[in-house]
Image (cartoon, rainbow, N blue to C red):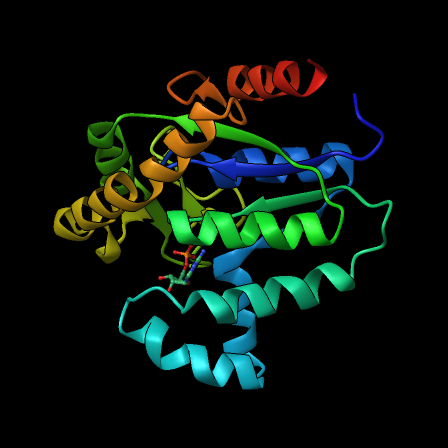
Length: 213
Ligand code: AMP
């Protein structure tokens, strides 16, 4: 295994990327850059970047790439140089992949790219079947079979965001914008795929095998 482990995780909505990110972060004590969460935090903190991003995010559009690169560049500077890093939610489209790689190179960060692969149909199905606790709003994947929350026993219900039209739109955007990024790295032999249809434990062990290679 390399001395410093930096990962970029790719996967459509519902692939279990968040779950695997959580496991890997704990296992390797990683600094975590989750693009959507960092953006929402900037909006909440009313930073200059957050103020610019808010309106765009409210419209459901992608935040301009220059802003994302500014955010990433300043975030990287806050991470100690020997700390492992996990990037999530980036890059989402080809131009962003190229500029993101430039930022990584400039900061001497080598990354391993992993794609958690599920089909478009599976991505839509999993998004639609996600449930939320009525009391604490914790989100449960479609694989969670019990009807009550493991935190406060609240009832689990389907989320109103689980609209099939929105789920399909997200899956379409992933297919048209992010799959070209994955193919770009595949052509250069710079990304490895794991089968997202397997159980959480099996996906984790596939990822660990990829890391150990
Ligand atoms: P997410 O939590 O990943 O769904 O992201 C929430 C919102 O943040 C998206 O709807 C976009 O507006 C924005 N966003 C997240 N990641 C990116 C990215 N890599 N590039 C541009 N905008 C992004």
